[in-house]
Length: 401
Image (cartoon, rainbow, N blue to C red; front, side, top):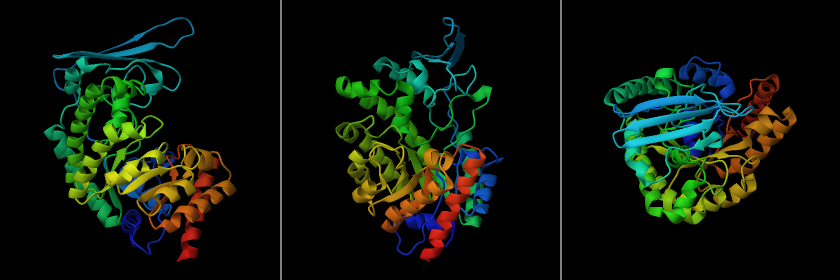
């Protein structure tokens, strides 16, 4: 079987397929690679099952949008305040963050980034009056961008087909910081990202209050984000991907109650799944914590694989709990904590974690082994543990064949 065949067999639950191992994100390696092609080759050299990822479509504002940025000094010992304002014919939006340690964008402030949420003093969207302005920032993909995207998609599909690899769209996992002339988004942006985008624009608290106090406003806002994401998803499906990923890190019950999930999140997932399945494409759902209370709803939406099963850092996601709840009903991807086991553990602990994941989830017939979410540390320990991870997986697959 090719790597593509093994991964799709695990997603679909084909009987008799060997256990595949495909890293969700591998920053320690991707930072050493020139491009996606080299990253795929170097993962194949390690013996891993590998996917070829499409880049994100560019995010472009309407031409009428004017941007102003400024850095303001604050009190002694306090971090500077970085502010960005968007001026449009419908009004203006502004966002401000404290430039505390770890801010990766210099004196620029992207529209979307996980780095914004813990540093924000002001989020751009705070009420219904901002929705007309938001539409100037969330424009449909430009024709030139779509043509360039599809052309590169054809090249990557040819490469994937030649190598027997999975072609994946919707989420790249890592993205370099854009240049000064196009700093619209930050790291880890994903094309299919409705609620994560909501949190970047509004923070993690206000949308939950709006769900109770202003449900019509929240529904309209989510509708705008879904419409914008849908146009971008359609381009990925046109590129002929095998699987599309939705980043749903902010869609779990660490934020949303099951009732609110059903009302505001589930309909958007279901519509995306239906669109993907109409195109013959599998749908992957990335959620690493707060998944179990809405597991039945995720299954109801029809997703093909839940990505990010983390027994170390997830909340309520021990391997046995996951198996008892959804094992065999949907594909599962993960099983080992990347930071706790691979980056900080011993070789023995890594072997034990891999063996446990394979033992508990492997015989469900719908499991892809991976560190969750990422292996970032480029250290001697981390690479030693990566080798232990892969060697243990190989020994398990050889002994079962």
